[in-house]
Length: 115
Length: 113
Image (cartoon, rainbow over all chains, first blue to last red; front, side, top):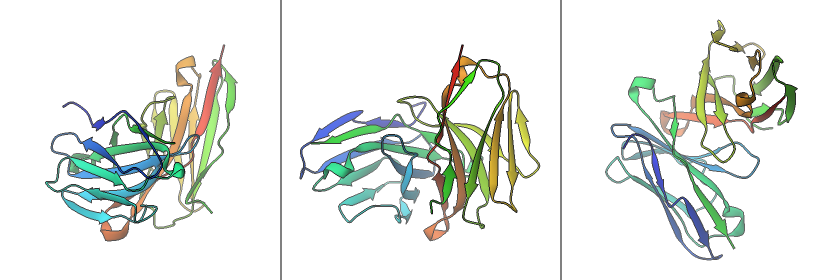
């Protein structure tokens, strides 16, 4: 596709439910980032992949959060036993060597609401 | 203290005004700097990179002061379409040696008739 694609666009979950958020980066983009954006705040770094390697997961808020990118392309962010404080927009971004891995192209995000 | 700090605003300015936003960062090892723009309910998009020598792109001018760990964005002749949130972004090496781009909270700009 032409841009970063995320699905679902909206997700409503009951507290305690597990959710999986998908990100399909721009074809050929080696780097992939996940961010969490609460209402009125800037995006907060969660984790970073270079190809299939998860180089930095320092921003994951708890062990309920897990991300993978097994084939170095599509990535999934999984949240287990969701809590109300997990409600936010989850943004995925990708970048390429051409942009020194610094210019981020974001998807439209998944808005997660935990009831 | 947050790694990247911005005044959240909102800045309400009349069309045609000049407005300036500031940003400070705490990690002296930060390597590169950017301004992103985020429209309401949309994803952030790169506005411009920020260089030590300063850079200009049309009505937008960005400057970096490494000694003071300070970044600025100046918008001249504001347009209604400039209304958005402006995010200051700082890149430093993260765990694992890869890029870690840290975003500020954002400064909201509203340009009015």
